[in-house]
Amino acid sequence: TSFGSVKDHHKQLCGATDKLVKIDLKKQQFSTIENQEDRPVIWALHEDHQDRIWIGRIGLDYYDPRDSLIRPFQQYNVFEALANSRIIDFIPRKDGLIWLCTNTGLYELDIEKGITARYWTGGEGVFYLPNDDVRHIYEDEEGIYWIATGGSGLLRWNMEKTELQQFTRAHGLGNNFIYAIYEDGDNNLWMSSDQGIIRFNKTSHQSTTYLKRDGITDNEFIRISHFLGVDG
Image 1: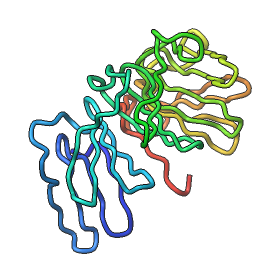
Image 2: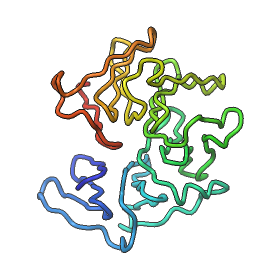
Image 3: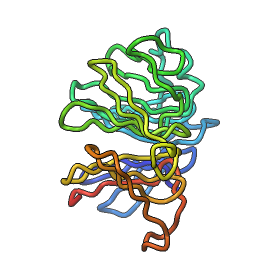
Image 4: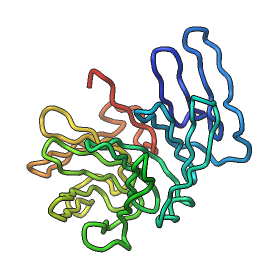
């Protein structure tokens, strides 16, 4: 079972349950990265501009291709809660920081300074979010963040103005457990959920849920079963 992958033209790295596996695409050979004993399940992988591979599991690790070793992350700073959190996605930001989506909130990662902020139910002001279980985050062209949560539906977050708007089943959303958010060219957000794929219009806030009867393969998705191809 592969829970995450990153690749270039010659190699691919996959999270195979609790191990990081290197695949040589040209030779069609694979090998397991060393020093991975007794580590938790890998949920997500992300390659930064320095070619390091960030590994999301319970806590944060990284793989350095210069010496082919995996190291535990140390720069939690004052955000030690992340060390015991499930990291299920890495989302690069336009300013070079990286969002970490976890079950204890949304964290900011600066690859030089470490963890620099946490957004969660215990936060105040701009650091407050109404749900700690953050599954995915998407920034649109206007700089508005749309957050997929586990149980609190969809959040529209204007971080600059500290404005939050929540959309749940009470507002017509098909399900409150959202796993991923992608935008099309017609002002719609497409979201996988516990009950079908949801199309949500950003202007009208109207939503349509597509189920198995509408042609999708199954009604229920899981937290990491999403992908956006280069062709949209």
